[in-house]
Image (cartoon, rainbow, N blue to C red; front, side, top):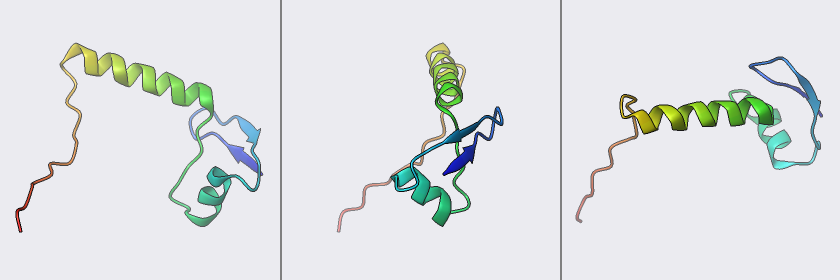
Length: 66
C-alpha cells in the first residue's frame, strides 16, 4: 500500500496486511507519518516537556468509589 506522510509529503510503501495499513483504510481520521518526522516531533516534544514551560494536557481521571 502506498502512503504519503502528512508533514513532508514523502511517499512510502507499507505492507498492505499490516495493522497500520488496516487502520488507514478503515478509519479516515488516521493519518500516516514517516519515521523521521515521527522521531523529530517526539524529540522536540520531550525537549519542551523538560523545560517546564510546556503544559501537557492529559485527561483528568476522577476515581469513583462504588
